[in-house]
Amino acid sequence: MRGFVPTPDATVDQMVSKLFDGKPPREGQSLLDPGCGPGAFIDGVIRWCKKNKKRSPKIIGYESHPERHAEAVKRFRAFPNIEILCQDFLKATGEPFDYIIGNPPYVPITEISKSEKMAFRRRFVAAEGRFDLYLLFFEQALRLLNLNGRLVFITPEKFLYVNSARSFRRVLANYYVREINMLSEETFADLVTYPTITTIDSPTDLRSTLTAIVSRSGQRKSIVFPKDSSSLQPLLHDEIVLNGYGMATLGDICRRISCGIATGFDSVFVRKTGELTPGMKRFAFPTISGRELGEGSTPLISDRSMLIPYNRRGQLLALSDLGELKTYLARPDVKEKLKSRTCVDRKPWHAFHDSVPLADILKPKLICKDIAAKPRFWVDRTGEIVPRHSVYYIVPQDESKIDALAEFLNGPEAAAWLNAHCQRASKGFLRLQSSVLKRLPIPDSLNSAEDKSDPAPMRDARAA
Image (cartoon, rainbow, N blue to C red; front, side, top):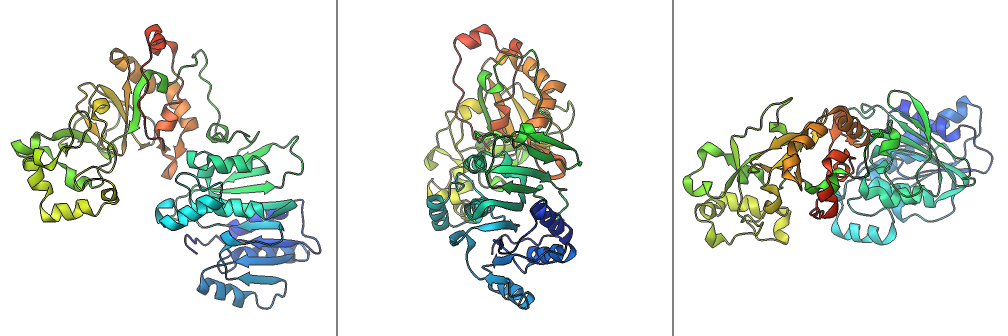
């Protein structure tokens, strides 16, 4: 099974306790571990039943990896109530289970083949956008959950708020999400997933069912699980309401909010400015990455340039128009690198990985790191800096308000709102994304009457 990560025994015992809390197993009941590996959760169930003097339910484990399947079979061969199947759980059918527990595999879409993706999209609601395999395990397990049954899974927390999990959250809204327990990011040692234990009951009574949230600091609160598939990010933290603000958002007053350019091979297209020949400088623009952005009020300084084979309207130039840049890109060692990129399946070999909206980028704008300990925004007054993929840029419709906008974005109210709504990266850092930035409420002073009467539509921006 791809994405297998062993679960620590202490976490297993914690999850088994949640599984049987107020619902101890009875004669004739059944339990499923949909990706059992060598059997950590099954062993945890045996420990709990022995400690609490309860009879163990019938247990079915699925494990598609032959070696781990053999290990589990050997481990539990003395238990007649335990059966380990060497099968693909995502194709499982049969009778529903009273209990389901496990740690489904974490496999990003980049590691799933094209044929698998097509098959999954036909069979699973959760196979939407850039889905992860654990969402499909989640959906399949819920299909096999008995009336009055309970499921306890440990997964990354991202399904609670990312856009690609909206369809799965719509599925979850039909169940009673009893508890969301957010564990320490060190739970799986060096694997940073922001692990979360989710306890779900079948929807036998949805009239007065609040979801308990246990934060990583141990604080508890209750929320109403949204029925509209919206993000839970504001509910997981203390929701910030910006009092006195109108209905306008940052997206309403901006021409574009997006991440910077993805060339697909920065070591080819990003070079030290001082090393460029005059012929190469014709296609060069100062560029900056998130790592190169300083702290505090450090000015924007870059000693690197991005070689851009596009015109200022964002149209790819023909090789015959590139002069010295063509000579450089066509060097065998350079061309080999560019042709190794996945984007060449659909684009000329000298094109960038993503689109190049230079008409928007080459304007006065604000930029920020995509991942930061706290939000910080810089002003590019000249509009000549081209942000790389680890930088987000914000192009206001009204350039005259760029300083006022920067003051607001770097102020305490915007920081508090972003802290409550942004995803978390490693070590508690914030992951700033266009989909969140566009929703940031703004003060009325930034949304002038002329903006309201004749707003320019914001260009298409990549939502994370």
